[in-house]
Each structure stands twice: as structure tokens, then as C-alpha cells.
Image (cartoon, rainbow, N blue to C red; front, top):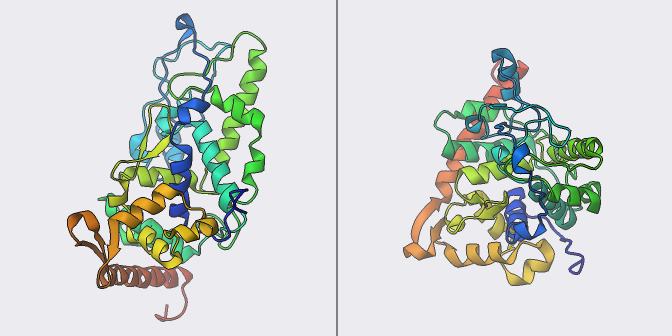
Length: 335
């Protein structure tokens, strides 16, 4: 198991993503093999997402409904200055820097998650999923309300092995093609069989988009959420990396996961496969004091009190249950 880098047990999803980023992010640029676009053919395009942008008001609203969390406020106008189509470059108007991450980085992160934990990680319940959504948004969004979070359900089947065998969908040829995609600007397909190269490009982008989508893994939403709170940053090449002070920005969901599973212990590495940097820095900078989490560097200043977080969740669950009962029109409240 150790030699194959496969865990025996799975930590929480956020802990797995942090670990995968710590592995995939550093030196990511060494995996790239981008072919520069000739200056005379270089288009000026700004777009968001894999498909070309929609400018009509009604169509734009439909597009917003399908966008990942935290990306709605980061959209940029689409197809500005779009030059004439060329058989040597993409017609989709895609720039991956608008999405936030390079497709090769996303693919490699999916592979790490699948290889290490795909056989043991099971999707959380709707209740646990909505609580995590509440914690992420409740701390970062001024317009967020708990009523909205109470309606949130896991888009994947609770208890399913959602990460299992996904690494087999990404073979070496796909990774080689993804390595040639620029993070900024348009891909260049060269002079030889450009049409076929475009077809492969479109298929690869659809595949990566599916693998990181909420319906498949939820990886993109998780990366964007962690970036929003300052735990992750994006390198110039489009890889997510841990911020210098990332460990000061984690929430009790990660800290409790560490304590409950004891994966910060070096002896537990072979069981949970959490990256050494994640284990080391969380262990060194956080400690438990009388039912609370405190940062060591602040001389034991209490940051998270268990009772406050427990009360927050109890209140959240009560609201969620009330909304669920009202929606079903049954039961406890005589509806």
C-alpha cells in the first residue's frame, strides 16, 4: 500500500485536497510543454469557461446558474476583441486563467486523489455536506444566509466512491496534450493536422471539466473555496499552491478531522497518506486548550471554541430540519 501510495483510511475531503495540492503544486511548471503562438497570429480574447460566452441577458442568467461556487463574481466579459477564426487556434475563446487553474494541474490533482483515496473515500451525507457549505460561505460571503445553506445537498450520491478509478480516465497521451495548453492566451495547434488537434483539445477539456465538476468530484468548487479564504494561491503557471500562512486560515472542520483521525502523527502516515507538509505545519502551529483550538505562535490565543461551533451547527441543523419539514409538508409542525 505504501509503495503504491494508497491509503488505508480516508481523511476529510478538504484534508485530501490540501494534501493533493501540496504534492501537485510545487514545480508544476516542469510538467508544461506549451507551444508559443506566433506573434502575428496571436488573438486578443477574454473569456470564462470552456464554452464561448453568452452576451444576451437571458442566456447569461442561465449560464450563471451552472457556474461553480465563488466564480460568479469573478466573471470577465467574453469574446472581447475576438479575431477571425483560424484553423491553427481554438474557436472556443477559452483562457484557463479566467477559470483559475491550469487543466493539467486539475487533471493531476484528480489523479492524486483517485490513486491515494479513491478506493476508501465515501461521499458525505447531505447534512454534513450542507454544514461544510455553511462554514465555507458563512465566513466569506456577506450576502449568504443559513436558510440558503440549509437547502444545499450533496450533488453526488452519499456513501458512493466518487473518486474511485478516475485516474484511469487520464492516460499519458491526454496528459501530454494538456501540458501544451497555455494558462494565458489561446492554444496553438500548429500547421500539421490542426483540425484533428482541435478535436482532441475539445474532448480533453470536456473530460477535465467533467472530472472536477460538482456532479463528479466537486474538486473545482473546493479549490475555489480554499482560494477564497486565502488558504490557496495560484501560481503564474496556473497551479494551486499553499499560501505561506495557510495553516492560520483553516477552520475547525480540518482541525477536528486531524484530531479525530490522528493523521498528524507520523506513525499514521501510511494509513491516511496526508502530505508531510500539511501534517507538520498543522501539528506545529495548532494545539488544544480546554475545549478550544489555539495557535501556538500567538502564545496560546484561543481561535476556535468548541461550544461556539457546536452551537452554530445545532442552530443550523434546526433551521435545516424546519425547512425540510416545510418543504415536505409533513409532520412535526402539523403542516
